[in-house]
Structure formats: structure tokens, C-alpha cells
Length: 257
Ligand code: ADP
Image (spheres, rainbow, N blue to C red):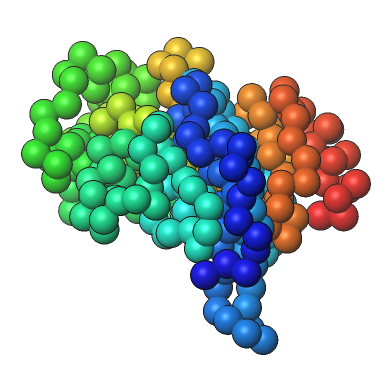
């Protein structure tokens, strides 16, 4: 329970229609009493459809917590979080799992591919688990965009790190989720490979209209995004469009990050 005053009656209760994911006064508190940590402090943020957003901030600022709460992997203590116009705080565990499965794509730092499955089987896995066939033309387009058409029968161990992460991005794209959340997707690869993966994600936004939200601490990676959002101590302290590595570094220095 929050000790905060109730929201004023004119506070927005519904997400804007142009948003793929929205947080309204999202608060996440871990622990209680002396050990209480306010990981998210009444955050308002929207991730526009078809936009690529980078979430930045120092270690411990709440980036992972925000991503997990907005992706339906964790629940906020207070406030509301929406995927599209679905209020996740109203959903049962089962409905939350279904929403995540059908509407959210994930890309992780460690790729998280299934080692015993081929690249193609990995890409199809979320739809197979959901018992969905998917849109064949779309899946062909996604696979074409990976540039891995001749490697689809390979297992992850037979692919480079960059190729594995492109398979992981294709897996996230294949089911046409409303939003993809990527957690340090280039944290495990070298610079050139990182550029290749970020270029693929950028392409998915520009050419396929995908919405991507990426947590990163890397100014070069964040510069692939349309917008950078900065967190400090669980609050959004800054955000701007069209980030470049230089403008991001300047903002980070100003924030003491
Ligand atoms: P970031 O991703 O920016 O490094 P996190 O979202 O991981 O930040 O953490 C935000 C704050 O919440 C930190 O103070 C962290 O120690 C705390 N925190 C995160 N997860 C937990 C947890 N499961 N239990 C207690 N505190 C947590």
C-alpha cells in the first residue's frame, strides 16, 4: 500500500492511443521499513508505436525494474502499466502470461536461444508454444532481413554471437508483438557485431514499423534510437529525441552518471 496521497481526479487514467506501452505514476517498492527501496518513483512514460527508445541511467537507477514492469515480467506496487490499452495491473497471472506471450517480444544480453533447436526452430518457438502458425509472409520477411537464410538449419553453437543475436531479434519480431523490450542486447558482443545487431533493430523500426524499447548504458548503442530517456534514482530526469553519442555523453556527464 502506498502512503502517497491519492491521485487527483483529473489525473490521466488511460494510455494515449499512439503508445505501444505506457506507465502512469508507476511505482515499484522492494522490501519494507529500513530496507525499503523505491526502485521506480511515480514514473510517467509512454513508448510510441513505431519508435525506438533507449533507456539509460547509472547502475541501480531502475532501468531493469522499469523494463520488467512494463513487459509484464514484474508488477508495479502502485500506478498503472499498459501494453496498448490493456491495463496489466488488472490482469490475473494467467492473462498476464498470455498478454506477454502474444504482445511482447524479448531480446536479452545472453541471447537465450535454445541450444538444441536450429535457428529456424528458435525463431518459430514462441509461436509454436502459443499454438499459432503466424503470418508466413511476415516471417519470411523477418528471416530475409536477418541475412541468415542459409544458416537456418544451424544450431546456436554453429553461429557467431552476432548471428545468434540476430536470430533472437527475429524470434522477437516473428510474432508481430506490440512492443519489443531489449535488455543490453549488445552487452555481450564486440563493437562491429553490436553495430550489426543495432542496425537490424533500427531496420525493424523503420521498415517494419516495430516498437522497440532498449535498456543500455552505451552511448553509441543508444544513438541508434529515436529517443533517449534517462533514469536516476527511479525517476525520469531527462529525455530527448534524435540522440547522438555526443549529446548522450553530455547529458550523462551533466547527470553525473
Ligand atoms: P538498473 O537496471 O538501472 O541497474 P535496477 O532496476 O536493477 O537498476 O535496480 C533499481 C533499484 O532497485 C536498485 O537499488 C536495486 O538494488 C533495487 N532492486 C532491484 N531488484 C531488487 C529486488 N529484487 N529486491 C530488492 N531490491 C531490488
